[in-house]
Image (cartoon, helix red, strand yellow):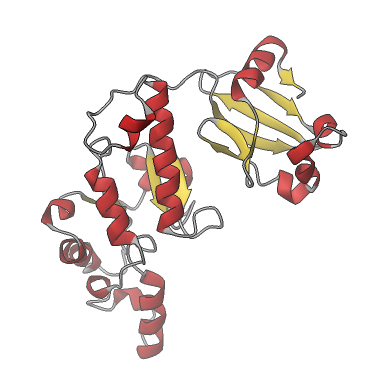
Length: 255
């Protein structure tokens, strides 16, 4: 909620300037009820709520320094959105206690975000700087899931299409990736298969193509999992099915 739907940072800074004698500006009554909306948030939430395949909730860690925020957050949601969404407001200091497929948060740790079982989209980061980038990612994910369940891409983009029950994610999709020395990666797949991908030979070869950009260690370290594949910014990714077959056989893959 804070920093994703409403601009808590601006309100905090203004309160600190206006009330320099208050040790915890977030404790000032009325602060949470009057927060400005993050650009694009209202339209984005409307799009997500209109899709019958999605179950949208608001999860927020309350400020324990301001008991009033518990009610003010509730007031804010109904004022900006509506009463039905206010009924879907969850306040929890540890966000890992909640279960879901996707958590959109302005932090990746500090309130249990790093232990959340689903995918965490770091709002405000270079990868997800705005709601437009978040929506594009979620649209792609919906199309991807539809392909897994046999639905057509047209159905995935049609908000009136029936809800499609998803099957367990394919075993060869990547669950996590970790950077190792010497242009290597450690990957773990959905079925628990784990091993090492050795990228050095490919990256420094004459046929490296787009992978030559990964010769920069900082660029190589910007690896992440996107839609079940090992990926880098710039539409660079590795085929997870081939990777899984090799690692399941020998424990490593050298593309």
